[in-house]
Length: 494
Image (cartoon, rainbow, N blue to C red; front, side):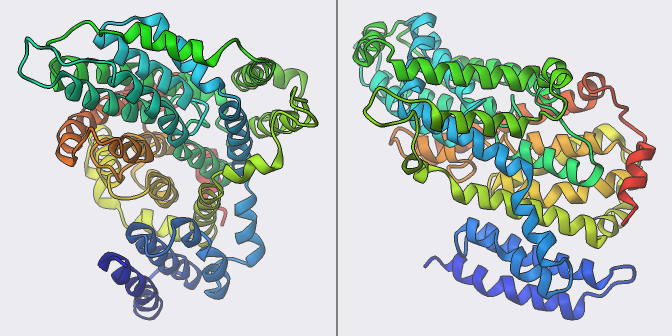
C-alpha cells in the first residue's frame, strides 16, 4: 500500500475526531459541525484514495446519522436523486452504442470526411471525440478512440528528409488531442460530464430551480467549440511542429477500417434511431415537448429510451439490443460517487454549514466580481489536477451558494464557473480518466503532458472567465451582481 494511502487512512478519522471535539466556533451548530467533520474525513480519503473513491462516497450514510447531522432516510434519499438516474439512463444508451460498434462508425466517418492532411486528421479525431463525449462518458469515449488513433499513427512513416521522428511527434499530438477533446466535449451537454449534473442537482436541491438540457447547451456548446478550435490550433501549430504535412496511407487506413465494419447492421440502425431520438427529445424538451407533456423531464427521457433498448429485438436469436448482462460494464462506482456528492450537498444545506462558511468569507467583498470569478475558476482548475473533478465539485458547490449571498453575486455565476472549471484539467495523467487512458498508449511522458497541459489550463481559465462573466448573464437572462430575493429566502429557510 502506498504511503499516501496509509497516511490518508489514519488522517481521515483523526481529523473527524479533532473537529468534533475541539472545533466549536460561535455560530456553528452541532449538526453543521458533524457535516464539516464528515466532509473532512471524506475529502481526505478521496484525495489520498485510501480506499476506492466509490466506497468512500458511502460514508455519509454512516457518519451523518451517527453525528446527528442528517437522518438516515434523508441521507440515503440523496443516492436516489433524479440526476443519478439521468446519468444511469445515459450510460445504458452509451453501452448499447458501444455494444453494436456504432461509436466506431460515427468516429471513422467524421474523420473520413475531413481528409488526410495531418493537421486535419487531428481535427477529425478531436471533432469525433468531442461529439461522442457530449453523449457518452469521457472515459468510454477516450478508450474507444485510442485504438483507432494508434492504428492511424502506425501508418505514418518517418519522413527521411527530417531528423525528428515524425511518427512519435504525430503520436504525441494525437494522443493529447484525444484526451483534451474528450474533456472539452463533455462541457457541451448537461449529461456530458458528471460535474454538470452535480451542478444541476445541487441547484435543484438548494433553490428548486431546474437547469434544462437546452439551457445548458446554449452556454456549454459555444465554450466547447471555441476551446476545441483553440486546442487544435495550439497542438498543431505551436505545441508540435510537423515537417511532413500529408499523411501517407491515412485516408486508405480510414477506408480500410470502415470497410472492415461492413454495411450498417439492423442493430446499428435501430440504436441510431433511439440515440438520435433521445438527443432530439433532450434538446427540444423545454422548447416543445414539455408543452405537450407537462410532466416530462430529462431523467424520464433517459430512462424511457434506456428501457426501450431492452424491448427492441435484435436479429440475434432471442436477444434484445441490450440485456441485463451487458449492464455489468455500467460505472456503478461513478453512480455511487455521484450519490455521495448529492448527500454532501444535502448535508451542507440542511445543517446550516454552507451558510456559516459563506459568512466567514467576507474578505472577498473587497475584490471585484471579475477577479473573484477568475480566482475561483483558476483554483478549481488546478485543484482538479490532483483530485476528482466530481468530488471537488460536490464539495465546493454547496459552499459557493451561501458565499454568493455574502458577497452579493448571483449564485449561478460562481457555481457554473466552478462546474465548468472542473472539466478543464489537462496537465497530469491522474487529472482525468481521458488523460490516464492516453498516457497508457506509450507515446507520452509526464513532462509532455505537464508542459502542454499547463498552457491549455491557462487558455481554458481565460475562456471560461470571459464566458461566465460576460456571456452567462445574457444567455440565461440573469444579473451578475445581486442575489435574487426568491433564492435568498429559499437559502435561509432552514
